[in-house]
Amino acid sequence: MHDLRTATGVTTRVRVAAALTAVLVLAGCARTPVAMTNDWTQHLPEANVPSTMPTDVGLPTVTPSTVASPTPTATTTPTPKPKPVDPFTLLSAKTQKQFRPCLKKVVGPGSSGACTTLLLKKLKAAGYYRWGVNGALNTAGANALLNYQRSRGLEATARTGKATWLALAQKSKAVPTVLPKKCKTTKGVILCVDQAHRKLFWIKNHKVVKTFQVRVGGWTYHPKTKKWRIFPTANGTWKVFDKQVNPESDNYGSGAMPYSTMFHPDMYVHYSPVFNRVGYATSSHGCVNIRTLSEAIWIFQHTPIGATVYVYSPKAASN
Image (cartoon, rainbow, N blue to C red; front, side):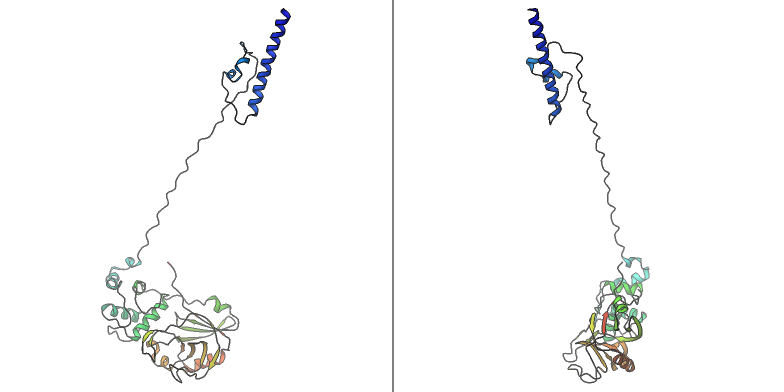
């Protein structure tokens, strides 16, 4: 009996040790580890828990990892954009008083009154109107306004808007004379027509050979319908397709466009007797007018068929 009890005790201890080993192995392989407590025996099968637990069994110590609490990100409040300053408010009190009644007035061909008089006086001071100020915007006044608007890089409408009034009030300078890249890189002969400065640059192999004063399209009437409107000189790139000493015109008759260098169905470079006589009091119907006959002949003789003609209108710099 003594031997049997001893054997039974040994058997019991072997079973308990095996159970403990199995529990530890399973705990190490589980996808979700079992939380360990001081009373780790509660996870063993109840029937296999010995009454007296050994004190020399080493248990793994689980130390909870320290998780840093997220640091709140500082929220940056966007700085509101400052409201744009109305440039009119930067003018002197005297100038503001003079122009304020006209800022919202539209003055165009045929207009009259105090704002028309102010417009003509300012155009005359700027060098674009040299005739009498009679209080009405006639043909010369409308073309002076168009030429002024082009010179300041504004939309050429022959009617005032706030931008035109502001340019006059500020005594804005003309846009700078800068030859576009096309004029400086085109091989051979190119005629560059700057509408803002009313100039034609005759260029050969990137070099300006001659500069001519010109008149372009503007406020005038159709010779057949007698209707008045703006006849613009179109911006763009063209090619000289023909040259005629005295081309016939259905609208203008014979002799109206001597020494025409033709680059567009409705636009030629040619001598204009009217331009020679009255200057900028009138305008062309879209052609590029040359004021001196000898200059028109020079262009006619030296510009080959196929030469490039580039017409452009510089714009005012953005603020």
